[in-house]
Image (cartoon, rainbow, N blue to C red; front, side, top):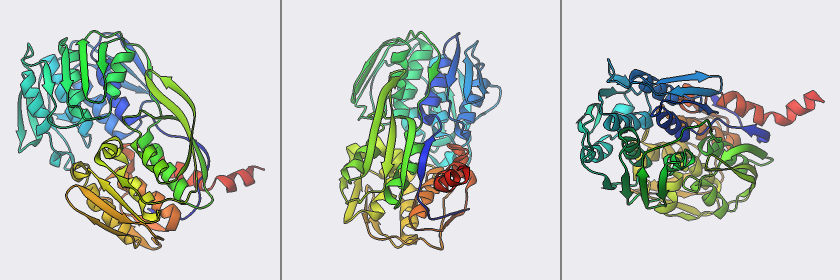
Length: 428
């Protein structure tokens, strides 16, 4: 797959937020009500969650852009649960099994089997579950044991997935739980529970779910800021670009990318602010901008952890040097994303260096013409390469199929945005 140079223009919409989509399915399946989840993310990762829930007796089915979910008499799965490439599925089904008192064996693909599961396993053991991992990873076995042994947790790491697994354990077991040292991690689970009238209070560091009772209702998923990020950055770094993205989630625990780009001098407008089911939503407009290098501390990085790869493309053109701290977790994602950033940027002549927890990028005038990027099967690296190619391509990637994990249809939508002016002219 080769991404071509060219400005992005027009108006687009992006798929539903992947993180919220996972959580909405798991919470909806805890009830006996039929719930419609609108604008569900269409990626393969959500297929893993739908399959996992179906394996334990819940009904979760896609219906066009939406999904219909209904809980039932939950039971231990008859076969190992295949979480495919989805770490969110694996960690949240662990919390579900812990709360529902189920025994399950979990497995995944080669990439997922190399990612850490011990941090969530350790916290669920404190809840009362028996969890046996394979060297801290998949495959693993979990046996939920009730009643809960611990209800007050101090988190061992600032992970939204660990936090959500513990909240799901509370929801499925009917157990109030309190979590501390949350570290500003994303709060989509808390907001969904609040929108369904759970007795829950939370801030950046503490969550108290005082009652696990919820009143489910149909919910609407905002557009995924992580998906919008590739279009935003491409518009900001590519001369002649002017692009608007409608109905994007701008949850402050997720909007670190926007904060970083604005600090760098990006011309981004955030308009039409409103809320969907306790999630802030807006329309984002971006255009070509002159950027400057900045220092990004770890507190901002945690709010932009899934966007650091694409943020590195903005740093590649910013005047001066950009330092991004707090990146150690990126080495354990779908790929080693720090290594992926360095390989991608160096292929375009951009100087980088890194240590265990920070990366330095010296901006300049990238030239990726004729370069090739190894994605490592990572959807975010593949889409970040598209943004770099829009500025200074053509740029080739080795695997476009991996994009379907989160954003099926990305490639034709990207091409349409790059050819918007030509399309408009043809229509005239």
